[in-house]
Amino acid sequence: MKTRLALFVSALLLLPFAGLLLSGGDWSELDTTTDLHANSSPLIVVILTLLALLWLANRMLAARSGNTPLTVQRNYFSAMALAGSVLGWLLLYLNHYVATWLSFAEFDLVSAVLLTLVFAILTPAVLLTRAWLGSFPSLLKRFAHLHTLPVPRNDTATFVLLAWVLLLLMSCTAWPTYITGMLWFAPLFLLFVLQMLWGESTILAGVPHGDWGRVACTALAGIIIGNLALGAFLLSGGELQHIPGLSFVQLGFALFGLTCLQLGDVIAEAWRGKTRAEVFKKKSFPIPVVVKK
Image 1 (spheres, one colour):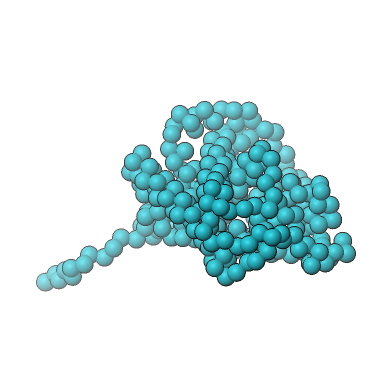
Image 2: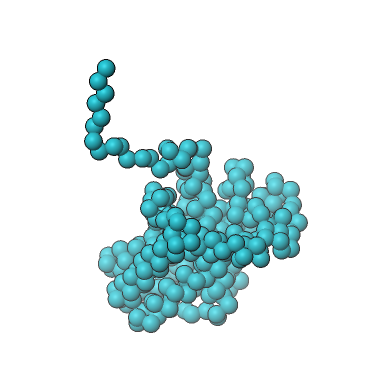
């Protein structure tokens, strides 16, 4: 797990920069900032909105299933918050090459901390919303028997996908006009490649059998959380450098949701193979018991 996560981060950081150097470019040429200035208020509003959504999703899950994931799976969601903050900064780094969404002319420490908090809350919010959507049996049943997809041989699919991901990441500066939209598929497919190279399953494991429930609920969760976060940001005075078409934005939110889920599956392997008692340890009895012989 740690090796795959390290390769994931390293590839997203190094390959676009390597492509920039190979194309004869320079880092200073990527200065796409405008007259936007870092404003803390919209980010604070987004954080409060996401925290409210996180609490609401947790309560709705408790009402439907009796489980409170934020309490029962505290360690897992803490790990996902940390992973989400790293993922958010990686996406912001990739955005520097294609300038699709957010860019500040002035970027101070306060804005960096607030953005980190936003990224850290986004991923658990998406996963909890997906879990809540998945608690509706009728919704899962509707997506359980859809069209199947032909499955190529695992080694063939792995190396074809690997070549495509490498091409996307290394050519985003050479052909920005053509790669801008497709670049955002790269993080998700890079996780797919790493999972397949390690002989692990991906979130698409059920799709060849016509089971689209997990994928559909996750994409819908990404769209819901993404639109609410974006709406809170814009309504509170935040500005984006570029606002793409509506369909492109929704596709981006869906891809983000799927990336969060696949990243969550990788991190969940740290708890795989452990008994429930090992994962959720019981508290010791507060009163010592003395047994006399």
